[in-house]
Image (cartoon, rainbow, N blue to C red; front, side):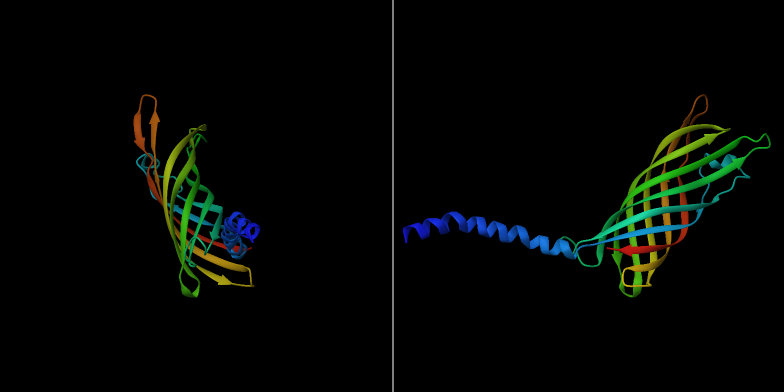
Length: 201
């Protein structure tokens, strides 16, 4: 009898801890991961730096990958968290001499997405962008902060496969420093329209 009581006192906390630890594991099995691949067109506004290039092209192709994690044991069922990475040319200008001036951004953002009924969703996030700046064929890399907001529609094709269409507003905060020319703002708004596919695991 005494041995039974000692056994219970020693192993009861261990058993309780095991039950508590395995409870989230059951929920983790129900967690879903969604991978999105998308591409489309970016419409960029003119920054202070870009205004000097009146004949530049501000409509460029864009593409990227987005991953969302749905975990009901931590978050509401309709709220997902994830990250997105993109290849996003901003502007391009070719002078009469053949010299090229362009800005290409590679933004990476952390995002939260809320899924509404009927396949509609909205997301917002912030992050970092590495910008490749080319002026008269001479290239350099710069940094920028990014704020993004997007809304879209998701249409189920099969059980785990769906098509997506989305509109994204993305704002870059960036200053450029030039030797002998001081500092110029390259902050600007991008409007992206994209189509893609999503797959859930």
